[in-house]
Image (cartoon, rainbow, N blue to C red; front, side):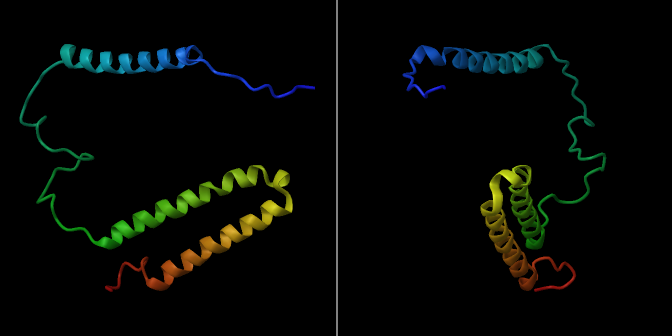
Length: 130
């Protein structure tokens, strides 16, 4: 039978982690400096032009964007993160038993309540103006 023995960690126990962290930062710094110093420098009008996804820029980049776009993006991230919480629950479904099942039912009820509120407020309606 194994017993939990309290361990007193010394600063030297963290030395391998610190060394690996320092080496990782040094490698990144070295790579960035070396690519800057050794890389080609070919300036041209075409290279200095703004470029996005192969489509040439037309007009002003400061055009106003509808707040509905941002609301939809925030809601997507919110519900996506909440669905991510369901994966560990599904993996450990049997180990959690009925208590875990009831907790997930409460979680899903709150999630669906929030979704119903979003639908009722009309946040996902794109064609109608508020």
